[in-house]
Length: 214
Image (cartoon, rainbow, N blue to C red; front, side):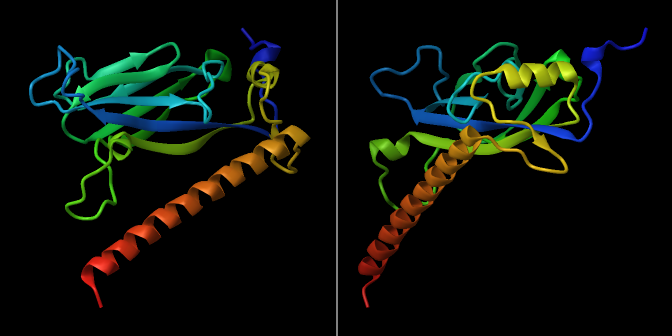
């Protein structure tokens, strides 16, 4: 049987959607330790895939499979509804495999990503005692899912979602005012974060130089 109109692909067109993936982690509160956590575990952590601002991405992502370390029971976790995340306890850092499966309308192959689970703050001076805020770790990566020549049905789904960016032609970029504003805000937030990181490490460098002396 010939495919219906909705399965036809739209030539010369690409649709891009931003996602973030990574993990958050925090050490146990000595007074509220998870009751079922093994004695050697020290942290609670969550690995996830979501939109950059926490928005639901299930309109184009069908499920996410997380491959944890083999020491975990049921180390392959298939999450088939949002939020696409897994929360566990542990003591060590390791690489987590992340496989993203798209909705049937996309007619696209799954995508594999990898994330190194972080439990401890990095970049602190030797022998430094982390603050309570620094103990709460966030390790997040930004990526973009690109659908080249999407099916007509996927194009309809993607463009009907409120707040989505206008699709991008391969031969010519087309941007709306909303897209332009979103890009400006995203760039400004990125610049602000970079400046904060520079200030933080400049302060640390100055402190180290004062400790070492002339």
